[in-house]
Image (cartoon, rainbow, N blue to C red; front, side, top):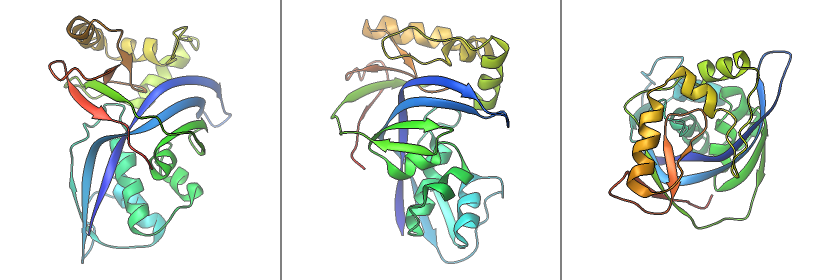
Length: 223
C-alpha cells in the first residue's frame, strides 16, 4: 500500500508565548502543497531508527510494517517532511486522533488534517480554513536548519517580532543560526523581483506565483 505524505508550507507564524516546559506557543497559517514523499507499507517489521518519526508513529498506533520512504521533501527545510511521513502512517492505520499526532511531533496534527488551517498552541490546535487555490515557488538551500536551534536563538534574541504583512517571527533567529540563508533569500528575490518569505524555521524561501526558472513550483492542495 502506498500513501502520499504531502509537505506543509507555513505562510505566517507568530510566537505567542513560551510554556513552563520550554515549548513555544504559536499562531500560524499553514497550507498543504503538492510536494510529497511517498510511503510504501508492506509485511514485516519496521527497520527505521526508533527516533525516526515514522517509527514513533507506528509505535503510537501499535502497528508494525516494513516501511519504505521515497523522500522528496528536503530534510531541515521547514516543510514538515518528517511530520508529513508520520501523518501518513496515522492515515494508513486509520487514526485521526490529533492528541496522538501531537505526541509524535508539533507539525504532525496539521499534516494529518491537511488543507489550509490556523494552527495554535504548540501545534495541537488545528482550525480548518476555507481552501484557497494558490501557487508558490520554493527555493531550498542545500543546508538543514535545526528547528530547536532556531527557537533557542529566538529566546536569546529576546523574542523578536516580524512586522511584515504576513509575518514570520523566526526569520531573525534563523538568519542568526544559519547566516548563509540570506544569500539564498537574495538570490530568489533577484530572480523573481518579489520579496521572499521564510517557511517556518527555515531554510526554504518562497514567493507567491509560478517562477520555474527560480525554483520548484508547488500548488496548494485540499485535505
